[in-house]
Length: 241
Image (cartoon, rainbow, N blue to C red):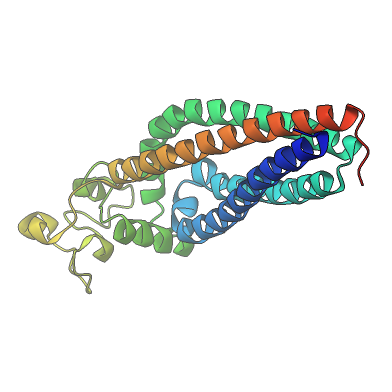
């Protein structure tokens, strides 16, 4: 096969990888923005543990988006220097993703340990701070849960205003004062705690993000290999037409 044909084949493969990489970047930007809106209530309830994740997804998506554009220009121009820069940045991003992925996996255990304590503290502010009240109601309705471990947690909040009662957001069909005398009609309430429900939600999404990360990593490896191969071919006595 002629050198020119080799370049065409390798460049086509690299551009296909870059296209997939670009689509992944756009998807991560959309996912991060969507998660930021959907998890606004959760972010208020557990600020330190959840509010940064959607932003990280958005930033990673933007990096991938612009890096893909740079790589496409480098491949189309068949510029050795630009391709080498693109390959180097890809290697750095890949290494950073491995470190962040390992840290996120370890941090997941810490998130699970801290969630119960944080939610109990937030419950003490319910009815006192409007943003917290609105956020807790949103979490309980969104995850169909009540309290931290179960609905009886509301009986022990420091304010004491929910003795034998729960907020209306704990009701399967919310209406005014539906949470009074909770033990007498517990079947009309969400009885499972929000911590368990949020743990399940986070675990499911960590698995999805992990699967996407593996696919993205495989694509990056292919992109690095194609880039290195293209550089080698271009350096072997080939001058672009």
